[in-house]
Image (cartoon, rainbow, N blue to C red; front, side):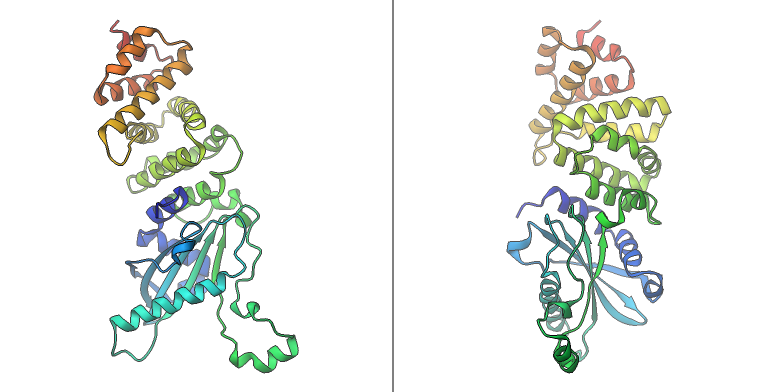
Length: 332
């Protein structure tokens, strides 16, 4: 099944053990995090989510050492429109699958590793369902106390991005990669104008653009915003942002955005898709700068290869008035 933009961003950022370690440590809290040897954190291949739910959930499984014992961390990203009341039941099913796979791989072991489920949610109303499996069992309180030995008991750790809010996510004590990804997942689909959103993230994006390990995350976030907002809103917003970046002389960030735009328009890696996407980008930039674009310019655009389109896009972005880009297109 094709990944949604949300799944793609989640997997691209949090499949890195260092980023997953930040998510786990923050969600579980410092007392438990101190027990975990995050240097041993390793990504495990495979997904344990039900096939029919992969449009709403995506997951990553990690293994590590906790207090000297093996432990699994099952990171599940939930992006339904409302909280899943049966999430604890679904997680129990996934946990059984993980344990069964572990037993097959280690047939002589007589103990099962602990599994800690961690759910990342960004549904708009915020999480309203219980995180405790026992709450799903229908019993009166008096009988529950007597029968508690027969009730499976576990809970999952929850990072509710909606409840946290954008301000707290912006200042969360994690890497800039994780902050950007969480903010994009929270706010990317909302109605706030994209230009205002990017303006509010300016310092964060500048921090990422100046930090080589974080550049890829910034590019992924920009790609995500294009996918969820659409080209009609994205291109004008990113052009305005680029202009403001030039005014602040944020060279690293400008270079990152330019690189991302140069890769725009890819269609499963096909050159013709990349070329058409770049042609559309230059056409939009010219139209926004000059209004009606001369026919001679449009003719040159249609016949240009990807290298020329890249050069013209860079000229248009680097020149506050766009005159050099237009002059290059007109050969003047």
